[in-house]
Each structure stands twice: as structure tokens, then as C-alpha cells.
Image (cartoon, rainbow, N blue to C red):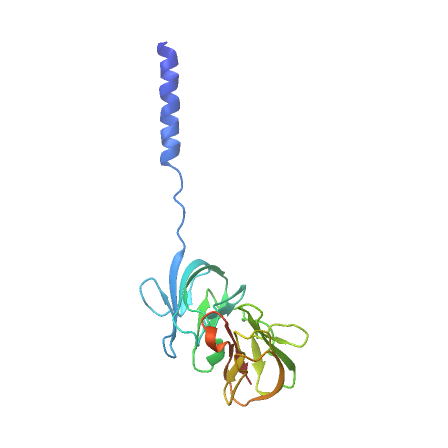
Length: 232
């Protein structure tokens, strides 16, 4: 019995040593991003300093989108993440940065709301563009409101419109509910159907400046809305 007890003691000691030597999970470095209110956009590290350079690796980013006129878009080698223009709130991303240059921006106001930083040597060039190509002028668009609490802006081929170039467009409006209407509002343009109207209309819309094109139902704008950026 003495010899058996000694064996158990040795096994318990070995287990204790093994447990004590277990590796502690590595925590990702933390970053914080903010867009809005107003025309402000920032990316800061855990100390509150603006990010200008980072080491390659995986990071946790808390993104606070404080405006329904802006979004936070982060793009670079291996990374392309964005919040929605019309939504607000806080989201958390886990991203892995490699060598290269990264940009963050508000898509509708990229000329005045953007920043960049390098990772590692910064030797890798970021992609020239990110996301789908903007819809070109003279493309026929379809704005549909209803049935139910749905509203959408798509091309005639059914492609969702997220960005489009300045110029003139033909918009076929399909209002499918007497409880809703369809409004299209952008720089130099503001057209809408009436709430009781049900049917189809065709609008000629000219988008003369960059900015944001919004589509919504006036009585239910909180849940029936969308937006696309206008670029040159």
C-alpha cells in the first residue's frame, strides 16, 4: 500500500506541474474607431493615440458609428470591412493586418473624412479600389416600396445600388402599398409618391454633386430606408 500511495502522489504532482505550465491565451491588441457625430472619423489605439503605424497581427476593433449620414470603411491588404451608412450603433471586428497601407474613410464623404496607417514595412500597396464599382449614369433604376415594410433601390437587372456616379438617371418607381410612399432624395433632387398612391411612375433624376442618395418611406422612415453614395 505504501508503494501504491507513492505512485499516486507522483502522478498528482506531475498533473499539478502540467497545469501550472499551461499557456495563457494571448489577447489581441485593442483599437477603437469612431465616425460622427459631424464630419469626424478616427482610429485610435488603447492609449487613445491616433493610429499611424501598427505591427502585423490580429486586432480587435470596436467601431462606434454615431451618424446615419456616414459609415466607417476600413480597407487594405486582406481587409475590407464597413458599417452601413443609414445605421448607427457599435460593432466589434476582429481583423488581421499584414504589411501594407490601410485606409479608413466615410464612403459618402471620402474627400473630407478619411485617414490611413501603415502596418509593418508598409511595402504592400493597398488595392486601388474596394467594393463594387459605382453604377454609371444613364443606367435605369428601380425604386420599390412595399408590399410590407420593404423598400429597395436596384438596377433594372436587379443589382442592389450602393454607389453611383453623378449624372442623369431614369428611375422606375413601383409603389405597392396605400400605407407607404417612396421618396428619393439627394443633392439637387427630392421626389416622392403620395401615401395613398399605388402604381408606377417614371422619374428623370439628375445627381449633379457627390454626396448621399437616400430612399425611404416617409411615414415609416425608421424601418424603411436606405442610402447609396454618389461619386464622380
